[in-house]
Image (tube, one colour):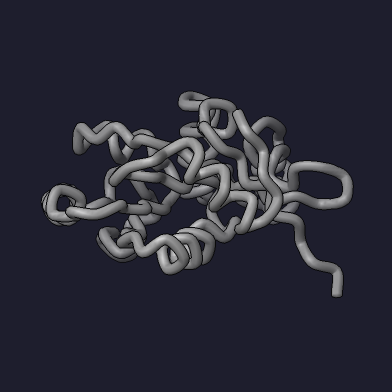
Length: 170
C-alpha cells in the first residue's frame, strides 16, 4: 500500500497506478472526509463522483442494507468516464452490485498520536462510550456495522493507496 499525505501527492500516485478510465473508491470511517476528498479529486481529474450516502433509504440506522441498489447499479453502469465512488462499507456495497474497483483509496484521519479512528475499529471504544452513557452497544448500530465491516474486510489494510489526512491545528 502506498501512503500519501496531500491531494497533489494523491493525484500523482493515482495517475501512476491507474492510467485509463476506471472506478476509484474512497473508503474510511464515517465522518472522516471521504465525500469531500472524492469531490475534490473528481473535480481535479474530471471524473464523476458518486457518494453512496445519496443512495440511502433515510432513517434506517444501518448502511449496507439501506442502500438503494436498484438505483446504484445503473448509476455506476452509465458512467462512461472515470468514476470516484465514496462511502463507508465500500467493498461490501460494491460486492452486492458485482463491481470490482480499479483502485481503492482508504482515508485515514490522523492525529499527533497516530490513526484517530484506530480504536473505533480495533478497540473497545463503542463499549466504553455506551457504558458511560448508560446505553447498549446495539444502540450505536451504524458504528457497530462499520466496525464489523472493517474487521471483516480490512479496507484500511487492503487499499491500494492510504490517504493520511492530518487535522490542521490553525
